[in-house]
Image 1 (cartoon, rainbow, N blue to C red):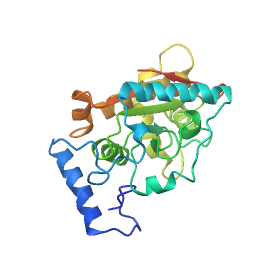
Image 2: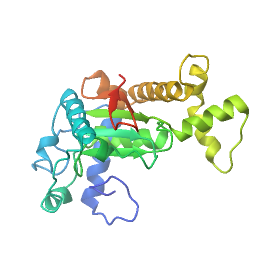
Image 3: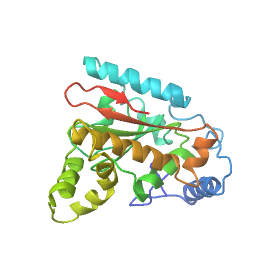
Image 4: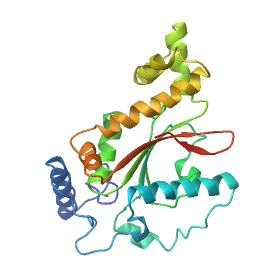
Length: 245
């Protein structure tokens, strides 16, 4: 298991790194406390400035979005931080975002490398893989905030609306997206206003709740006030992110 990203894949690992990850994974699953510094014994976190509360993390995202909207981004020193990031990561927020190419959480929140732990899938819904990824972020990386980020003019939600209202069928594996997004669409079909935006916002709300109640790791962290899960909506026309919950 890779100490830097948490996945086995092609990475070359040492017995120590594998034992380290399994130690924290099992500790979290068993409901035990995971040490705040889980990167290396007696070592400082790679980015000390990311060790913040959930409220401070949300405020940091908001301020980053204001800079993005105004076109005034920070200048990041990617070169000189590489050595620190070899030791690991401690992102201050996890973002569940749509795979839409117009949406990039790192840009939208003017965040640096290793600041955000991002999972992306068309329609920004929490499946088992997403939940497992965020469990790693929460239990091992001590990420204090998770955000579900929906967006204006979401094609996946629009396709689901067409499927439900008009009986439209789609090729390949696209119907799996329709299945995942159908609860939000069905819950808002009779609401006044913009059907697409209503369903998109409802999808965010449903997935915030799904993450909050995901056991045995995320729900425990929420109950102990170690983690906050919020929803948000990104406007393509302005770049502004509205916090929904």
